Length: 93
Image (cartoon, rainbow, N blue to C red; front, side):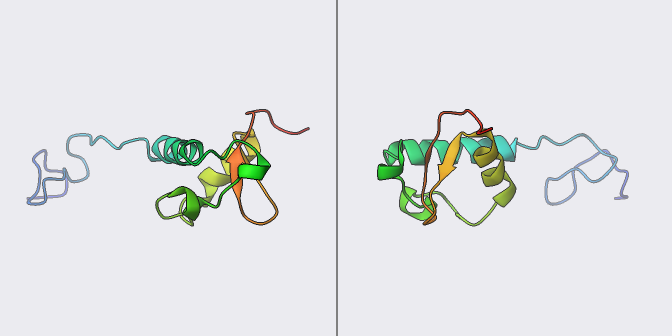
């Protein structure tokens, strides 16, 4: 079986040049996961802010770029002590 084969290899994955593969939108899934976990924890203001670990976010240190994007967009707000809460979605100017 060559690299440009159109059939799946023994792992069930199509090699390069084969059929296109579907990749789930990982950043979107991660954003939704963070938002749902913060909401379920009641983290809607600084007084009720929680760490990602307290909220139950899977692998809290992963995907730092997604966390930065949520912070920049104002969807989440970071406290000085490393806790987070759901923001208004408006960025600070």
